[in-house]
Image (cartoon, rainbow, N blue to C red; front, side, top):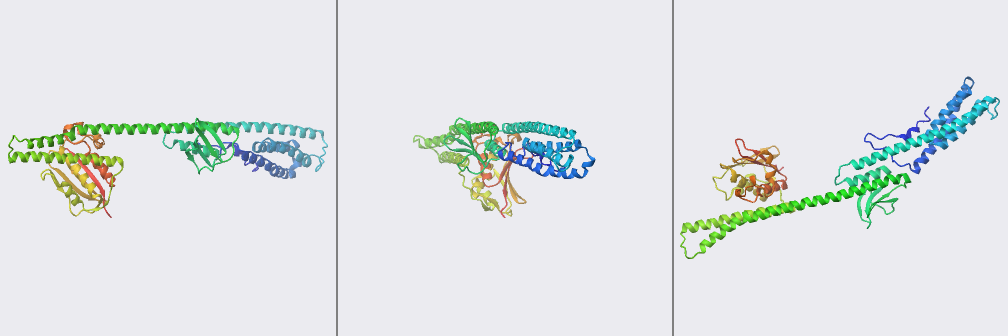
Length: 477
């Protein structure tokens, strides 16, 4: 029979993801739907069964017919509850009396056995209806408990992330079929929201913790729903607290990083900036001594010391300012098509001719970059390579499809692969040796400038020993 095809509606299983299909709560609409479905089965299936049995009533005993009616009553009770089950039992006994006991088409009963069978049928049918309804209610309650446990398990087992609070609110919204769910402070400030903006007419408002409330707009809930909702409100409050703690931890890490950079900067000022200043002061003081007659060669050496120290001081200050711009996000980038060999030529200006060997073809395609930033990147890489290379640093360039690669190759001691990331850390010198010179900003600035232009800076070992720094830039189309 197809009349009982809807009776499993109340026992739907979760989907593949474990989420219950439909809302957990047994709303008034759901109960009315179940009731009217049961009554509809009474109106539709009892006459249908009677029409099927009437032609064969002479070949079936009354007891067999009553058993078929009893089966239908059980199915209706499972689907619609106790009221449709009782109505179906009474309707079945009336139809059985009218169509299947002699004399037919009257409510009179000739045989005493038929009276006993009908009375027993009514008692058994009502009893079975009540029993089935209780069993169904308990099964629904058990399914509800499992669904609640699954919801709470999903909420509590989710890893703590920045979206954990919104995830909990979305869970509440989907579970209870709400329009909007929000966590609101006592002052009225919305901490987090799932769904459309609140319209100001919440259906429920449940305390989540001191100073916080879970507010939802949508259908009204029953008492058993509020119990689960209270637990979910507590989970939302815990997610909010976890997010606060995560924000505080992030701020603490940021402050620790600032302190580390400040300490490194003070160390740099204490040594690397003081060294050129001391050289300048010593040279100037020597030139100002009136009791010493300096030869032109000696004066030239002192002036050269002043110039070199001033250049070194200028480079250090420029690097510090560049790093501060990078960390503050205030770097101005003007990307446009550039001729690569011209930029490399500017980066080589002022460097000793025997310290760098450039092999940049003049027929390379135009690259997309910022001229000033790219020049500074190449200059920093050359300066870093010259500091450690045992031979002249080589600058090569080649086109590779839609990118151009610029390689700065040195033959120094190289860097272990596990230290590649560490050498781009601000204020990180190779081997942490201050005697190497500089404040450890050159490579950090080179990578920051390259990435700001949309390029990529990658290190690799030089065949035979050393380090090769490759700047990859997109080709202008």
